[in-house]
Image 1: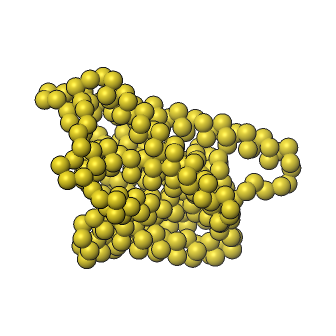
Image 2: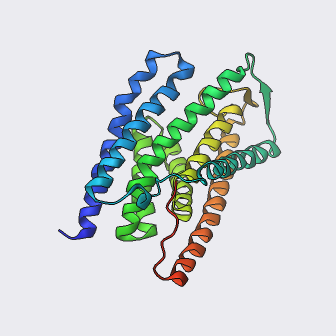
Length: 275
């Protein structure tokens, strides 16, 4: 068996086990109030996905730094940097939706308390951490080692999309949302050689969408669309989402290319692989 095939088979096995962890952790959300369900599920699934990552890393006799899961003093600033990017994409999306008319936001009848805001933020962070460990850590970096950047992004993007399809998303959402997210999160992970930035982007995007009432459960604000314009608002929203994701992914692609050139110039020195 060639080294490339061995890595690919291990990545496939890893990518099959990760959703099973989430399936097992899912019922735990019923043990606590609904507001705390995502946080509990995210914490448990993240811990077991990290444990699975350790198992596969030791199997291959490599370190966490080799897959971008090491920690450093840059971790917190990178998380905040990523969060700002995710929030900016939501802001762009909402500005475009609003500028096209027939939509507005209202304050929710029962706005959540500060405690609920923190609980929601922690929940989205925990769930994002689980997904990035599952799709942008061991699996993406090992596929990049074996096959290069684009094949790795495509293969892991397919796994990421299939997980969302298995989670009950309709195919119109599945084919528009997750592939663009996989491209951005993957490029951010490869460009920065770590998980902190994609975790931050993922958290910022989901949290701000919740705040602006664009999730199944509304946050402090609620999006109101005039009668007869729901289809237009959805189409404009997805278009703005895709533009924001592609622009951000392009920025990380240039970052990745610049880093690759610096690596070639340094000949033999490793890029930072800290979280």
